[in-house]
Length: 107
Length: 122
Image 1: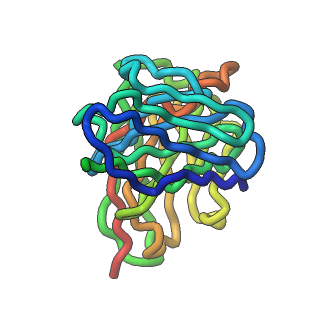
Image 2: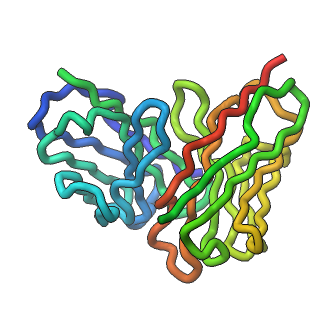
């Protein structure tokens, strides 16, 4: 199975900050990488697919980059509604494993 | 608009069975693969199972050890998950999620239901 490792596990940031979350795969997954946002009690929401493609309706302050084994999710200017948990997932092969999640909290 | 609505969750004793359903609408169900994903309380997301658009190909997480069966009814736009020999560690919110469009593997897991809670407890 492909292991997905996110860092950091949590971070504190202020509104307006630039935030970067990284995800590393245990083997190459090309660009088969999704990023999700999840708030408590809600379903995950797809933000980025194929490593760098913005899902329809997602604000442009979210961006993704990377290929192979190393990926990044960037929020260019953190907004109040962005405080949530972010998870990466490889869709290269089953089982479609997830990272452990990164909780973004208010500083 | 795409909608996925799960049902069938509840409290069940260890060793018993439960069947989850996911009603799909707003898209051509038979054109898409479908997934089940679960999330234990306070934990991360865990992929459970995948079924192809026609239902002929199925994959499962190794941790399930043959206890779960995924199926679909394309005439009724419904996805199901039959869960047998349930254990305490199966306690989780179960989500259905839309998979890739047949012939186009790029966008996967783009829509999710609201989830249904399964609690395995005596």
